[in-house]
Image 1 (cartoon, rainbow, N blue to C red):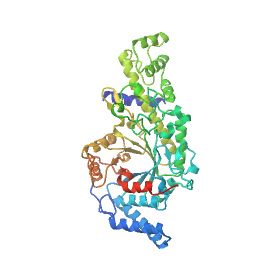
Image 2: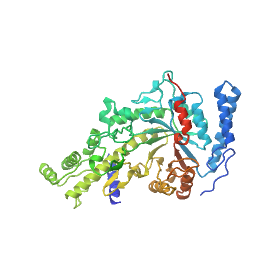
Image 3: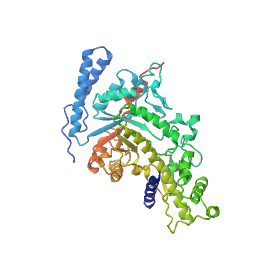
Image 4: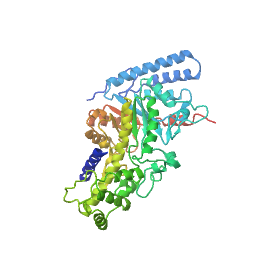
Length: 486
């Protein structure tokens, strides 16, 4: 863990410069997770079908009455439950423009006891904005003729709130999507590794385009998107993909400088600007260009800048007796470049969060608890996701706790790692994957996972499940193919 502590210190230095008893369920909620019994579910579905299938004003009125009754019942149940917030991650599809489609989704979310929705508004290079109101560089989710003005993002926010749901916006962050990678005017914005590769061929699905977090154009594009998202006034904003890409096999580990995604021009220049003297700048450039340094490089550096005692950069101690050896210098350069990569992620998150906070809206980060882990002697998880250095002023931390071991113990251990780092446990809101009522392989049911958290991670009162499409696959398939835009 010595090298991990070193990295934490390096990131900090760079920053300077740049009980539970289940409650008696409320009437209509048939278990401790506030899920509604089947008779209530059937009643609401029947009234919804009548309300949208005809001009039956009586059915419409009764449907709204059931919606409001269920909203209050769910609120009462959550107030009595140890789990105050149960969230669900939701993607909207083009076919959801059909009458009653969004309503059916939100009704089912209520039926399952969820009181918070994390609505995906930027994903896979698409934005959930109306085509005629989209001034971002990304295409709209809905582009079919006749629907150019449909704002499903704003509509879903409103329909969710009318049901008593808290409605968040959920965005990809440093992953800008495949479409961004093929724009001729954005090639200089992409994150590059030491082989000159971008991330498209690096990740198995061949669709993830990561950008250089130091690039000002990347920030300008994201700022314009975020402004549109914030105009709709969501109840909160969550940032996902606050990291670099993760490959498979050996590519999942960064163990040498050319594995790092710091070779975009903006990132490179920002790194060199961290040098404190000429020797420092020269040796940093030599190191990232070659991927290593040798004795001849050190000798050449000293000949070029004889008036300087040693190479210096931000945070490097000029009084350390070991700093002049080749092995010490090589190791210092490695840890410093990793810290530089990590600081790019931190700075980008701070840039995005500041815009949200200016609007008085809560924000949060979505991350993998193991994304900041050291690997082997000097390696690190290639995602270089320094969540433990995210600002503690961030209101919400959403660790994606997906560990597999056949029970909940490894999941609770992941969560505890986060709890140990975050001052306020109420800010930690774990994300779980799985299914209600059944285990799958080494992944236990959601009930088992949540009970494990209740017992092991005292203070956790908010949990979310990824995702609606996993829990309701049949309904999701129906939504994706239920329309014909010809």
